[in-house]
Structure formats: structure tokens, C-alpha cells
Length: 613
Ligand code: ADP
Ligand code: ZN
Image (cartoon, rainbow, N blue to C red; front, side, top):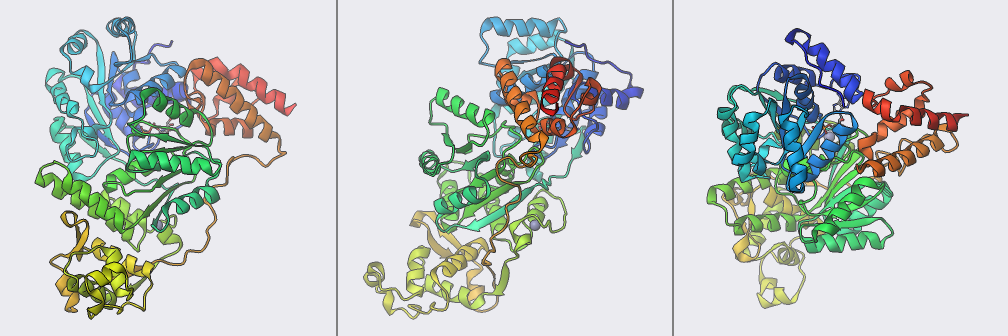
């Protein structure tokens, strides 16, 4: 394999670009990549905040190739490590990983390679890095840098806290001369401050990229019949495409996967309760085959960098805006149109609040969790642009995007003060002891068994809500909770109770603006169906693209890596469109680096020739 290119600081930018082109096959840097790479290559510390798929990996991979010694990459998930190392080796980089899946002999070999200077990049799990044995090894090795990936794992306020990350603080003291670069896609203020203080990155330069993912269309719909809604969403807009469906519980994952599969779609389950082999097999199918829908708990995802996931659907409410953003961010990493779709209702808020209240965290932590949940509910209830609100959460100002449900069919907002007063007074007169279902029965004047049992048909609020239907009342209660005038009491089975602000509404001191679900016009799907991006049938390149994909499948199988590690879909599409005749033509295609040109160039040219006569 090739030796790393070394350079003097003056030629830093040029050296970085040379590596980008020759090793990774890309023509130019994205966003702040060049600046970050130069800063780290010159020995500086950095904190990099970049959205999922923004291109964080190159920010440490290229400096590691530019500097003397081996770059140590701390990464929390073995699956991620494995794929990254596979991709690097395909590109001719001397990379390896050390984790619990290696036997002693294999680990010993990697350690010897590290010491003899035969590695450019070494991926290691945090718990392994901090062992005395590994630190002793590091002391004797020549180090280029430390990259701390998924750095938000160091923060207890974050959503993936990992105690091992705390110990990484010692790197600063033990290796003061080695630059450290911490990277994350989670950037709310608290987490950011935590990363800086816990990893002693006070001196580090902070790079904040835009968090926008313009190709993702956001849509949050009112939960009515979640399964039917999901089926329609997938069936009409994403049939035959890869996607992820998130559910909270294992039982619901199993049930939902079976339900989707029962409708003729290729759906499989993934959750922590499955045995390891079945889980790995399902993940493998999702990663390597086209058009698989994986239904999963949030245990699935960290480190999944499948580029062509066309949709992420939530059947349950995530815990926070960060979690929502991270999970939806797994859609459309290839930059093509993708959708983030969620169905949500009052029951979801009640359920999430109960989970928080019943968890055994400290009170301060619970309060913070509730605030995070409220921010997400605010996003779900907003009548404005979802993207504007999402980005504002991460401290970024933006304009209405034109690519979210609210921009595409703006919901009407009306003065709902009178309805809110009716709802609140019904809560009050029934003693703040009931949930929305019963309250709506009372408002609609339904003589149910429960209504009779509690004598609620004798209340002044019985039957006063006839001007709205059940669905509209559900929306009123949900928004009263979202606006903070009511809160579900988990100790009373989700009974809705007054907050401090409820009386102001009842007395007419506070106006309540309510969002009305627009009768949404059927919209065209954002991308095309299965095979989006294909040339029209009959065009010469359609068969060629298929042939290229088949060839890629074989190579991937032979090398034991996911197909996209061999070449991204976009690269195959460029080849099919540009019909290269020579190795030089191929070199000009994004995603074709020198190593891949050497390994696959001739084969690719043969396939092109065969299909174009
Ligand atoms: P992150 O770690 O930020 O989620 P990655 O580093 O995995 O993102 O990059 C996302 C995708 O973008 C990868 O497929 C990567 O090869 C590609 N990419 C990154 N930088 C560039 C670039 N400068 N030009 C073209 N593609 C790039
Ligand atoms: Zn918008």
C-alpha cells in the first residue's frame, strides 16, 4: 500500500488537495473541510460540529495521512469502525482497527504494525484505549493525532452518554504534543460546552458547519391510525426503496415489521432483544441489499452510513430534537431527495413524559429531559417552517425552506381561545382526573358508561363541544399540552391537569392560537420510485448501470465489504452517464481514486465497452 504523503506547512493546502484527489477520488473539499484539515495537520486542536454526512471523516483521515505517524481514531461502535476501515483499505490507506472482535493473534499483528510505523490510521474503542496496556503501546508508537468521533458521548446531557468517554480527558495531559480533533453531529449548547470542558478542548478551534440537510423533506402528521398511515406513506411514496422505521419498544418493532412484510414489502426487524447473529444478519441485509425496510428501536443507527436510505419514519416520538435530528439524518446521505416522516399524537407526549418521570435519574436530569421533550413537541406543533425551527434549535438562523410539510401546504392558524376555554373548563369540572378520551366524550355529549358512572352528563360542559369533531378536539387537547396550559400527570395515569397558565386562558387573559390540520392535497413524492436516477428504460445506460451494480455486488462479496464501500451509487451513475473510454476519463469521475483506478479501472472500462458497442 502507498506510503503517506508528507508535506511542509507551506504546501499544506496543496498536499491536502492532492490526497483528496488521489486517495479518495474527489475533486474538491466541502464546506470547512479544507480549513479544518490544514488546522489539524499543522498540529492544532479542533472541535468540529457538522451534521451527519457532512464529511467529518476526511477531517481527520487526511491530516493523519499528512502527518508523520499513525492517527488514532476513537469510535464507539464496532460496526462503524469495521466499515470505515474497509472503505479506507479499498482506497489503499493503511488502516486497521482494534476491538473485542479480534482474537489475540490478530490484535497482536495490528499492535506490531502500529509500532513499526506500518499504519496510517488505527480505529479503537474508547474502553480499549484507556487500558494501561494500550496506553503503554501508544507511549511507544509514533502518533499523528487523536480523533474523537461521536464526541457528544462524553456529555451526560447528550443522548448517548458513554462513561468511557470521560476518561479520554487524560489524553490532553499525557500527550500534550499530539493534536486532538473531536467531532460530533450533536451541537446544542449544553452538549457543546460539555465536550469542551470534559475533553479539555478549551484551546481548540471550533468549526461549526451548517446543520441543514436540504435534501431531506420533513413531515410530521397527526396520529390517527399509525399503521395505516405508515403503510400508505411507504406504499405510495417509497415502494421498493430502503428506509428505516423507528419504534420505541421491541414488541412494536416485531409487530410493525410483520405488518409491513404482510403487505408485500421487504421489511425486517432490529432490536436489542434479538440474538446477536440474527441482528447482524438483518443489519447486513439492510446494508447490502436494495429496497429493504428495517424496523428498529433506536439501538439501530449509530454508525449506519448507508448512503441511499430514502426515508426515516417515526411511529413514536423521539426523546429530543437532537435525537430526532440524528435519527432523521440517516436519510439521504447521498444528497438525493429523502423524507423524514413522523406520526405523533397526545398519547406520545403522555408516554414520553411517563418514561421520564419513572426513570431513576436525578431531578435536574428529569427537568432537562422534560424541557428537551417540550422543544420537540414544539417542533411537531409549529405552524411555521420545520427546518427554520430545527436549525434555530442548533443556533442557526434560516429562511422558510419550501421543502417541509408546513412550507408546502401551510396549516391555517386560528384564534382557538373559546375552544380552549371549553376544554379547560371541562378538565376543571371533571376534577382534573381524566385523560383526553373521556374529556372529549363529555364535550361531545356522549353518554358512555364512564360518563354515567361519574355523573358527568350532569355537568355544564356536557355536550358543549358539538361544533368540533373528535379529531379536532384531540388536536385542541394536544396543543394545550404542547403550549404548556395542561400537563399529563403520570401518577394519575396521564390525567390532564392545569398548569399555572391555564387560569389565564380560562379568564380570557391569554389568547390561544391553534393550528388547524389542512386537508392536505395529495402531493407528489419528492424522488421517483425505485430506481430514481435511472436513465429511461431503453436508453443505453440503463442496462449499463445494472451491469455496473452487478459487478459491484460481486466485488463487495469478494472483499467482504458493503457495496457502497466499493463505489457509491453516484459514482456508478456518473460512469453510466459519461461512458469513460480511458483510465484518464475514469480518473475524472468523482469517487475514483488512484487505488480504485488501479484495482478496478480495466474491469470498469470493459463493462462500459461491452454495453455501448
Ligand atoms: P459524517 O462522518 O460527517 O457523517 P462522512 O465522513 O461519512 O460523513 O461523509 C459522508 C459522505 O460524503 C461520504 O460518503 C464521503 O465519502 C462523502 N464526502 C465527504 N467529503 C467529500 C468531498 N469533499 N467530496 C465528495 N464527497 C465527500
Ligand atoms: Zn419549511
